[in-house]
Every structure is written in C-alpha cells, then in structure tokens.
Length: 270
Ligand code: 13P
Image (cartoon, rainbow, N blue to C red; front, side, top):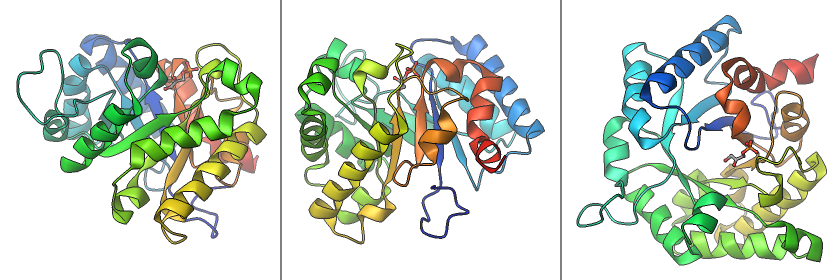
C-alpha cells in the first residue's frame, strides 16, 4: 500500500480528476466548490494525499482563480499542451500559459489524444519536454487497446510507449514524472482492470524506469492507474505496491464520489 503512512514509500498518492470535454467555466466553478466542500467536510489532508483536477482549457482560469482566492489545497492541470512554447500554432495552448495560470500538472498522451488526434510517441516526447521547460509536471498516459490485451503483448506495447516518451529526460525529470497506466479497453466502459492488472503494469513500468534512469530514480516516480475508477474500486487499486494514485474520468464529475475516492485511506483502514 502506497500511502504516506507506509514507510517503504515516500510517494505522495495523487488522486487526479480528468474532466475531459465536460464542465464549462460556470459548471466547473460549481463542481470545484462542491469538491472543496466535500473534502473539507472529510477533513482531507492535502499534504498526505494530493488532489488534482484537469478542467478543459476554457474552465481552467475560473478553477485556478477559485483555488488561489479561497486558498484551497487542490491543484490543477491542463489536459494537453503544445510541443512548442509560442508561435503560429492556431488552436494550440502553450505550457507557458498553463504555468502562468498556476497549473502544476499537464496530461500528455491521453489515449483520446493518441486515437482522435493521431498523437505519436515522438510528439508526446516533445510535449513532455515542453512541459518541463515550463516547470510543469507531465502526467504521461500510456496503455494498450483491447486487441493488444487479447494478444497478450500489453506489457511490451505499454513499455515501448513509455520508452519513446521519456527519451532524453534527465534523472531529476524522470523522478518527478507521473505516469498513468490507462488500459484503453477500461476507459469509460465500466470495464475495470483488476488490481493485479494495475500492479502487473505499474511494476513493469517501475522496473523499466529503473533500467533507463537508475535504481535510485524509479522508486520516486509516481504511477497511477486509470480506467473506470470509482469510490468502490479505488482502494483496492491503491492498495497495490506500485500504484501511487488514480486518474479518474467520469467519477471525477461527481464531487462526492471523487472526494470519497480521495478518502481511500479511510476505506482501507475500515
Ligand atoms: P473513466 O474513469 O471515465 O473510465 O476515464 C478514465 C480516463 O480516461 C481518465 O483519464
């Protein structure tokens, strides 16, 4: 189990909510307020378990203003960024703009970006580096589709995505990175991978990072599981040795549900 109560791991658990293309800035402000209230009622300790939200770009400013003005313990991130810092890239958003808003994180390579927008591992490697140029922490998403899972080559496939995306990072960058394992077949389908599936992949990712960046780096990198996570299944995922958090889609749009995911330690204790 990877809570800060566990002396074998200093990795702070990260509970991340990817709102995807939901919540305009009015709805997003309301969701954030409800979430902050639910966490406050639960006496959530943000130093112990970090809570991050990833609103759409147009809602980020409203959410970030609330976080700053109300001194909330939550942090925010963008759902994507340009590989470039500025220039003639119509429709793209620079990591610099996200950093300026006060974002801490940015998602890179979500499967919906890979599939719908054709983002390749080379582009994602450039995006990871663009994030670090602006002192943002990338949450790099990797994972296999159903065909690859059925063929039994999911570990090789996912590690190949990882290797290509982290190419050229420094050891400090690799240590600070967050990697989210999201099996595509478990996203938005209600089909949840088992805790042992999450552990198999997160263990393989950590071993790969140790091979690439060293045995002292890999234990620092935080690894998340994502795909149909709810309050009912989050604790068993987070109980696994190499699972340091969850990346939540649908259930992050319900403030009470997401707050109870963030309170997974109580469920594990109870
Ligand atoms: P769901 O939790 O809705 O399956 O989405 C997972 C996801 O894609 C988070 O990034």
